[in-house]
Length: 83
Image 1 (cartoon, rainbow, N blue to C red):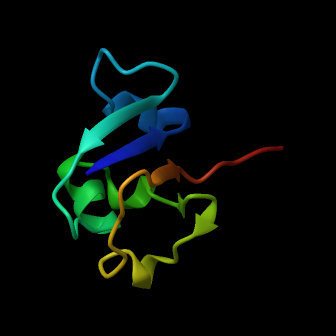
Image 2: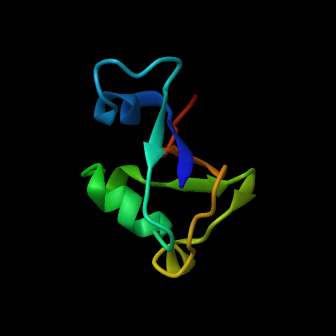
């Protein structure tokens, strides 16, 4: 199945060099979870703050059980500080 992974701010450094517009298309096996994608891309847990699937927040305790589906968009942001 095809899923779009979008990584924002400093997490963009974890995308392949040929990624465009902070996103990459992934070919995943059915049943792949949000947490499995996070781990596959070696995203540091401290930097995985806001996780959305198709615009809906996925809390940390649900990421290992939330399976992705064909056409889903997984977007991840690090903590953001401002002043």
